[in-house]
Length: 613
Image (cartoon, rainbow, N blue to C red; front, side, top):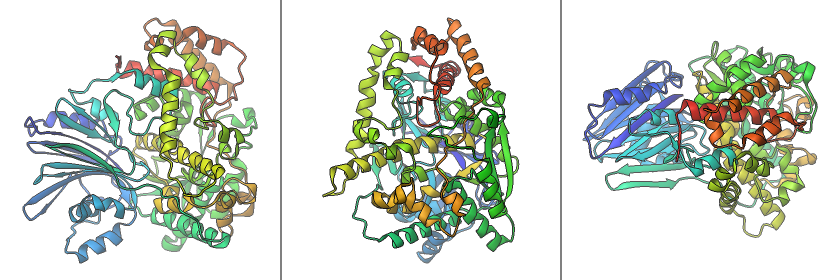
């Protein structure tokens, strides 16, 4: 994995702007700590920072390829899982290759097929190709947006980068938010509207989209989307197909020239990845796979069972580490590590995020990076197979709102009266919800109940899955750790999208069809284990510390947060007897996480020197 950055200017010669592109590039050195490079011409400045995973010696970027009179320059962040198949096909068509890197295959694919190359790529990626002959920039992003890509049009320049901080490093770009940015942070946060960068005039190239930019302007198009079709396979064939696709996705993603591991919680998803990866490692290399689990100091003392978190992971991790013979390491974070990491997590994301859910992952990834460069993780299975509680909730069916967010009145109350009037938080959130629902791929003749269920799945894939993918990318890449997500394979998602609910929820269980598919691969006790999310801290010391910090912010008249919030309401929340288990967002963000989120908002406004206008 890597960091990509660049800008195009058709009005001014940028070939001498080495200092600017280097400064932008260096903002992404955490994403690519192994090497970096830049390429400039009159119209384009292209930069890259590299995390070397495949072909350590031969994959340097920006990579330049000349075909006849034409010159192409690529800056690429990603991992391609069908590299060999594409290389063979391209060689048959007359292309020569000089490295083993997937970067060269992506560039040759673009030269051969243009934007049609995207439909052939199986992987996670965001890349830019500058066609020096046609004076055109091409930007492409993977189907689910596993790899990030932001851009802005500013003073005649198109500026793009993996992370917003690199865009803000350009001298022409200001850190500004308007009422829409405030509505994003307080109405939808820590989620974010697809395509919106929160900062004014900064946008995200949406997943499954590509852009062309030249002297005539910009064009953006979608190249892939889920299609709703009748599912014709019986139960047995469906389980067999799911088993094949899951196994194939995991084994394809084990290719690496650097140390690789798995994240193991003892749940269905991470256990499937670890079991299949472990078996493949023994078969191919004759070695045991490494695995890691995450928890918090003293969580065993303070854990409280709930509908969202029915038990702790330790027993299940022990079962799976023994079952797979993995070389397992338990990683533990204390309260100070989690609280002290809140600021670093904001910088990693360039936005306020999931509070300790982010900062703890950031801490854990920094520890994993000491021994490994690549990890496999179980994100996306819940969104694709229907694992969350709200998939099984009548209230979610009946309420026309994001099912993971029942806190809209509280969110409105967080704003001071002037800011509440200025932003129209409720109207903004409902507008974003309706926009998404209206784009749900429909199946003709589907009854109203199943059509609504399809809406819920689409909402989760477009919004909640994107949030968790963004979290995993930023927190891992902040430490130079590449995390792959096998359940995000588009072939698996395409197939599971059309599996009917009575199969998906086989036996009345969340992810029932996946449980059936894993028979013979996982122990029955793991298959039957109830879903448990990423662990959170239950230590009351965490809430005490975030309240202490937030009180200091509220007492400081120079705190930028005070320009936005209703101070009295926040103080009331902190002093009241609240139900700390009531979710503010999703399953993991409750009242202590709300306080930490407000701390992160203040850090963000202050550290990025954001103007509100």
